[in-house]
Length: 383
Image (cartoon, rainbow, N blue to C red; front, side, top):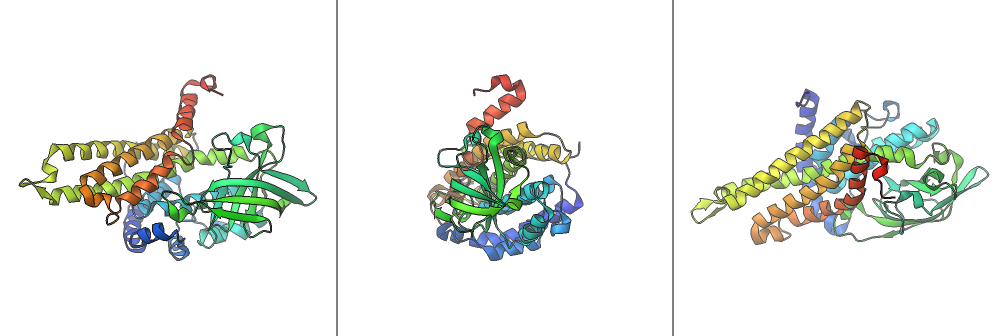
């Protein structure tokens, strides 16, 4: 077992810590207020290789291990949680297109992803279908050399900003999860419409409802074979859930760092706040939880890099890390008193941002079902 970072990882942390502090953090509050999507900052992130981690080198990427990507996600999250979603979606594009698309499709789309010029979205959830993805109603009907897609997707991250989406649609009405296929759909196609949603947090992510009214795409834009759509994305979701957890962890860590600095300086009753156990003990507890969460996430990515399954670790991280991140940020907000409750400090935004991922990409309840299944077998499933 080796708990040290490599020299390259240490250098990446130093580089991203400076970049995030200078190029991202000063704008985060403005993006929250306006829901503006910062394409200029994305291009700067791309110059650092942050969108090419899982894109093959021949298509402009700088392939690296998942643990290193997780470290990068953590660092960007310290400045703005929402921008880690762009990294996650670039990873999904690299993994799914890289494994399941013809070479000409990879050549058309992946270089622009790595350069930060094309924003991807993943369109799976529907208005009446969330965790039970096998019940998708959106349909894709074969018509000669095209597919015709009809249906609606809801709560889709970056849907207002995205240039293209990976859309999951039913090609077989009788086969449940096996009847779903995946398609690459440019969002400027006739028949595509978008309706923005105003979320409590993560407003830069520009979630929206995507509607498809007989949208035509060529057969070559199908990702993989028909009726295999859910299996690849569910495998990638195991890793993506850990990346999301590390994003939440990065937000909680920077908040705790700031709070520790504050209680060491702020004085009351002739002492620093750090000398009062009522304030120092919650900080000690939070640091313990965050450290344990970090190693859970790192172990999951270590397993993935070794080619081993990390489904259990991904589900554990997905339900637990956002929860303790919310708890940590909430406690830090309270420790700052009334100013912590104002928009003068970043805690209220961070709390809103991270809270959303107690829901998104797998609720705690679904994640615990997955953990129980992995521990005790499929006979424990309630469905």
